[in-house]
Length: 169
Image: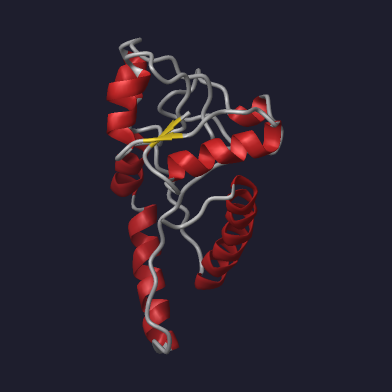
């Protein structure tokens, strides 16, 4: 199982799969997702890889790489013919997200202004279209919703990291 490095999203996605299925795969970390795809997976040295969809899409479309599944809960708009892992492993979902934070003590009025501006950008049709092209789904919402997501994700990945015995090096 190739990954873009120890503790990277591609590593954790594979570890979650191992955790949920009991499948034993040896983790082979590389210095980034691109070297893992180009050097090892395409050359047949490694059998499986859990990258972000955007990384190998060109190789999938050219039939140099076979996509077995996507890790999101719903099929990808970029690769709609590829099933989700959850279609075979119920409950499996790996989505990696990016959020915006502010220093503790930032006045609530400023936080609200930032939240409104960010949500407006994320719901803009041109922005949504551009994000969809690279298989990113915008999730506009409140600061409280984002806080809840961070807590849920921290708990989920802490279990995976503990089960896989991943240590900071």
